[in-house]
Image 1 (cartoon, rainbow, N blue to C red):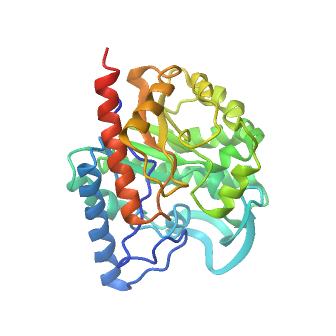
Image 2 (cartoon, one colour; image 1 turned 135 degrees about the vertical axis):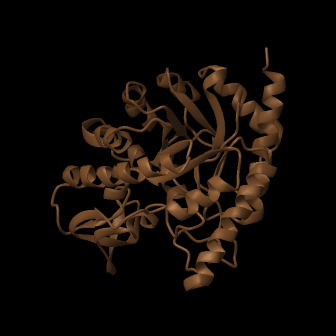
Length: 340
């Protein structure tokens, strides 16, 4: 009960990459970079276990960015001529690669880090992939001329890699879709269909992560514009409840999301964000337990998994670990308090 997990990404050690950056520069090259990525993955696996997490991840230590890390192994993507483009409905500008031809995988994308993680932890392993809609929102299209057609093409590539990850021993495959909180009409029109295409044939647990973004200034400013209640989830949760996805990961702690919206996810595992990634203040275990208690009004005990609100990639490493420790301790406190 209340098995703690995380949204996926964790800060990269300063000897691996530029600290506290969303698109960090690698500090190594060649074989030294590959070894540093592996070392960082093993470090964070141990730290997640020490923090008491039941479902762990590779921390995305081998990826410069949660979307672009996948695209680097895709033919038809031009990284040499990036362009500046507004993403997440022009919330902020980003340097993005261009889609210049038909999309094809060159081969496996995440085999080394998935197999390394699987070999070094006995706990359940989650692996994260960007969702089709969020990929489409994070590239410049110079080929397809149709967002839906391009999303379905990406979904097919994601499905191929997801099936291979399942064969590598991954227990949970999560698709990160922050764009679902921005383009709610499109989610209903084609976003969930693309997600279904990405999970087709998988037997492992599948999850979708939908949050209000990393704790970067552009996202903080956007949240301040949303008013006293953030009701974006209300538009998409009923459709997700009817979908074939097993788990939904959402933001809760430190937010203005009405907790009752979680009741719209009947029949799904709910990964409740009890750790705020937009603040460096470390939650107490009691605060984590209280957030779990509020969520229990709307989510059955057996389906509630305490989680972080979002990825922690741009966060200070020590702060991130202390927050994971609070997550683990708060979940244990909740198990004792709400056992009956």
